[in-house]
Image 1 (cartoon, rainbow, N blue to C red):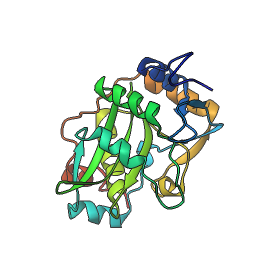
Image 2 (image 1 turned 135 degrees about the horizontal axis):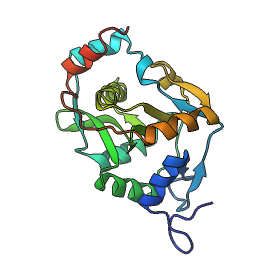
Image 3 (image 1 turned 30 degrees about the horizontal axis):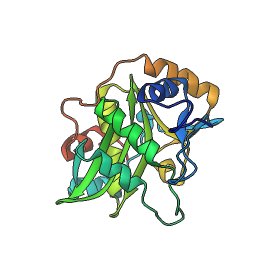
Image 4 (image 1 turned 120 degrees about the vertical axis):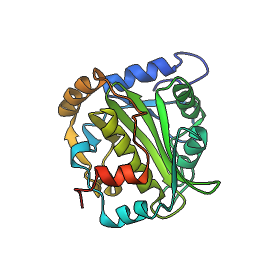
Length: 222
């Protein structure tokens, strides 16, 4: 088990980036456990950006602009939202060590948040790590219907327009499967990862991030 604080080896933001480039990521047993452990799934969840499925009902929500979507304006608040208890999950793996590390990565320009707002209220969002042409999705949360789903679609639009080739979801969930996420063997993932991290992409692609730009990009999907 890797030590996140106290005596012994200390994980740094640079350590995290090297870990992602190798295909592993950290988690904690609970919010109260200061230690981290590394995870390297045998089957890895990914969301192929060229096969993204956007349900018609979600397109309608985007067209109606029920949410204002912002990027990197409330990163720590998104982290806290992802750590909130929710139905079926009373414990979170986001402990203080995780929070501090990802906030540090955000300050260095490697971690980003996509947020959904209703007025001054943050109602959903997600965060992840960007490295080369790969984006590693970490967690998402929702306090309003479709809030996290809209954030995911806006993230995908941004990644496609920015030249990313890999969206890593770590695990496959029923929620993500609806959008086209799938599982691939570790060896296949490692090959995709090696190519992606050597690529060049930008998270702040011109023209991304509006309801019109999202609907235009995904106009051919149903």
